[in-house]
Length: 307
Image (cartoon, rainbow, N blue to C red; front, side, top):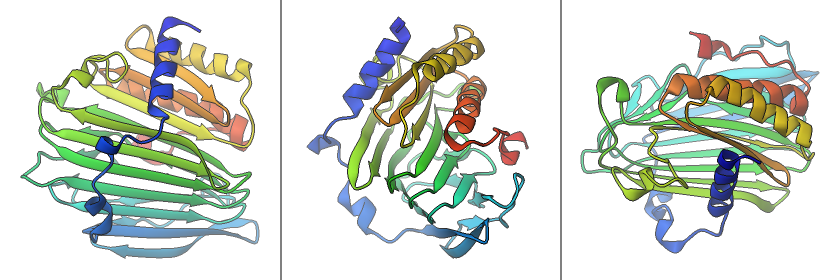
């Protein structure tokens, strides 16, 4: 294992711990009614995965499901028409994937979290996958404006023999406009359970301009953090992990830090850099290797990522 991989593995081991009391998301964030919500349900019927439930409130919608791979995989795009989230807004996304159903969820563009106006913004994502099902959570990048105050809660509940691939690309500050993330705070909690057991937990508590932004165990003075988490009922081979590292390293070409590690059934790839485009290419390449290995399906870049 090279130095970069060791650092990232150390980071994953540090994050995958019991939740410290002082870093818990505020309970009120999860108790109050959201300003916009969407709840989706998928079921496999007659060899086709169908969107069988769709409830929404406020400015969260899905476009018509489409099937670029054939009837077995349902693709949906979650749309938030305002395009950005202002201080105090609360979003909730729920997806329930039935037994043996296969679903891919993405977004049409980058999510933007604007400068706080004295209120904290919240997003609560709850994903549930039944036995034999597979869910790919592939939103496009998230941009945190300077002085944004955001709390993110991401919960994944997996049945035995189900699969999950989730990818997030966080951009801190609008660097293309010369803006850094010097104020505000981003809190994130990721909680994954399989067959009733907690298999992955990590949290982020990042103060804009704070020491964590420079720490080698957090952002290492970089402005972009991309994370892909893959869970399956099989342990990935060393050959596969080495292939992921080598291919992604070639794309990174020495720009930024990349690590790939495995903790039992959980595989984590993390990239730190200063380019969302490089982060996107690396994450898509890792996903492109993992998808055939995990799901037995050819990896074709989601249509929305090419628009």
